[in-house]
Image (cartoon, rainbow, N blue to C red; front, side, top):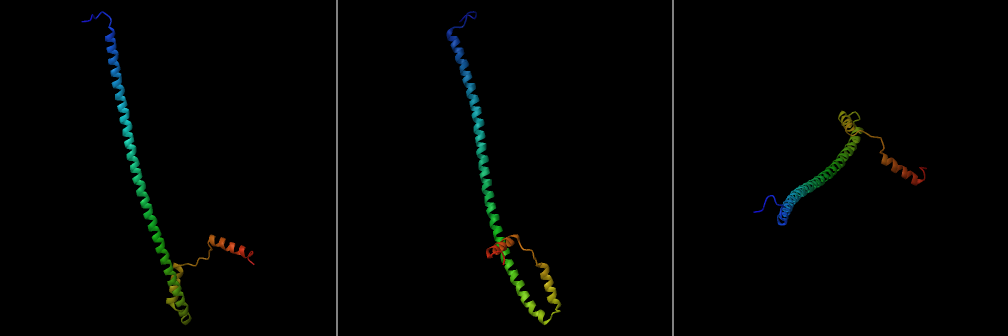
Length: 145
């Protein structure tokens, strides 16, 4: 048994250094594992977030397409209904003009004209794009002779 008062031998010192290095190595590996675990967890979370973002983007795009299709359908329907109403209105004016010649005081015709005037007021304002187009026509004709 070694004497406690005597200094440590070279073998004992080497064993102590080796033990200390083994402990430091184990602690370093533990820190590396913890850091790697956090990085992996963060990467997994980021991947899940990206997948969620991609799914939301896909849903949003599909919803946008659906809304655009519905709007196009509505615009088409409104255009068709507008053409039908314009034809009915023209037909009424043709018939009303004929009937007003026979009975200029017809209350029913006067009331029908008043209803149409309220529903479709006469708008004498010329849209800006039409004003510009007419200006181009006048310029092409030589200044509106």
